[in-house]
Amino acid sequence: MRHQPGVLIVEDEPAIAELIAVNLRHNGFQPTWAMDSATAQRELDAVLPDVILLDWMLPGESGLSLAKRWRANPRTKSVPIIMLTARGDEGDRVAGLDAGADDYIAKPFSTKELLARVRAVLRRRAPEQVGGVVSIGALSLDASTYRVSFNDQMLKLGPTEFKLLHYLMKHAERVHSRSQLLDKVWGDHVFIEERTVDVHVKRLREALGANAGQMIETVRGAGYRLTAQSALAAPSQVSV
Ligand code: CA
Image (cartoon, rainbow, N blue to C red; front, side, top):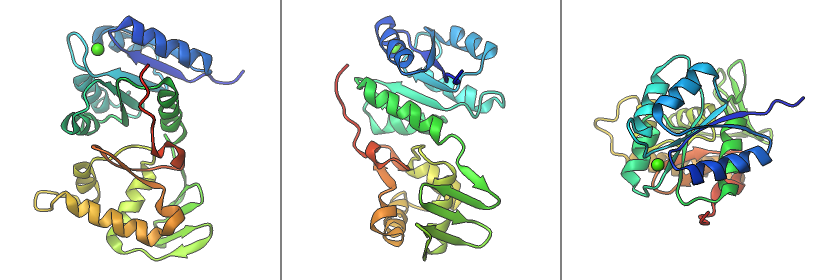
């Protein structure tokens, strides 16, 4: 029997939780519903899901606080978290990603988009990595020889662009805020402006060329992501 990925839905509104659960079940997932943080923690202590859908606004402990806690815990830290948020605010989205969420989805959302995001985090949870080589689709990076190729064609990248691409490929499908990228790629962002990231992303896209360059998506109000699926570039915002 095929493994059915387990999805923990942490959502206090029964109608929304039910809608998500029905759609997940119809698409081969095994959803579990927790309506508050205490129940969610109990579920998580019992069985580790493949992905967590976490509502931001919960009674008691907030989704943001739960995300931080689960990220800090060695047992739960690598379970992908997708935040569900009614907030459209850029600051809130960035706070969610900074708390360790892999992605976020703003309410109201289409169930189609939700399923696509769940599949994306599952698919790219562990990028194919052999030795120092990371491959996403036709794009391949060898950290030991400093080589990047697309469809077996060598590409020329500057050192910062190389580092940036390496990080994005190792954490593909995740959305990274500019401040996270400064932290992880530059190491210290105290004296560097966030728009520096935009400059290097632009250079990186140019160095990758028209096709591979499209794999680096700008996620409005949130940051950047490297994706194998450029079909996800324009998520629909259809009401549920
Ligand atoms: Ca809620």
